[in-house]
Length: 321
Image (tube, rainbow, N blue to C red; front, side):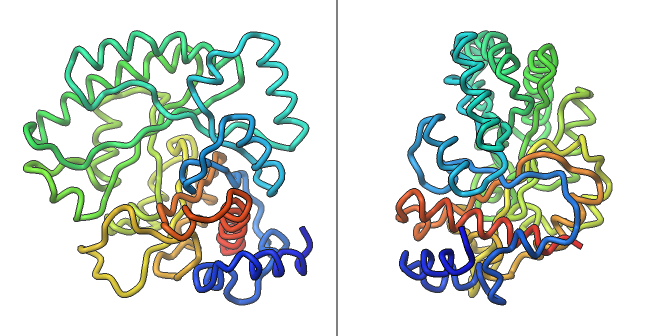
């Protein structure tokens, strides 16, 4: 899409102040402004933008809007037969796309019976993902619990996640876990749980699973008070996936709800340049996904939401130094 067409598209879509923030500085083609080589990819996860789309529709949207990778519908991709796998891999290649990450299908937050029954299905799903070329699976951790103390919860997570990681390792799939940091969430349960990078590193050390790592989200990184220096304590292979968001203005940090975020670079509240530069420095080579949980974005038509997201990600990439 040319600069002129992109400007007309965004003006016509009526995204107002939200996209005006994303395009601040009149950078209409942030990709052209990138000066620092990177291995990370602009990734489309439709659900993050409030878009309902099946896997093939997601691939079409990602290709049409210039994304470089696309999120994975784990159960669908794992169910494909050999001929269908080759077809979808060919489709990705034709659109200059690679796979991003799949979501974990195991319910590790419930009781033992539920965990065991869903874990039993994981080997088949992991095998299907591996055949399709998917190399990353990610999930998030609830930052509080109403019954389990921190240490009880920690031991349960270490045990369960170690078993999940082992199944995925058998198929050479990397496994990432995301800490959730807003105070409005970790203080909502009786017992706060992991909500900082340091605590996530403790869990990873306890698991001792070579294929396990962290999902880093700029929103949670900022809420946790983490810094670029904290990211530099990691290796590139320790980071499995990345979510990119900005924060709203005029709301005290400790009162921010988790589901009211902004597109990357929309407000400048979060230092995305420092965040991405640190990731680039350690050699992170995976997907970067906009995840604004934003009502304005959620109500956009599919193509407009995709365009807004890819522009915002590419503007953030242009901030890498």
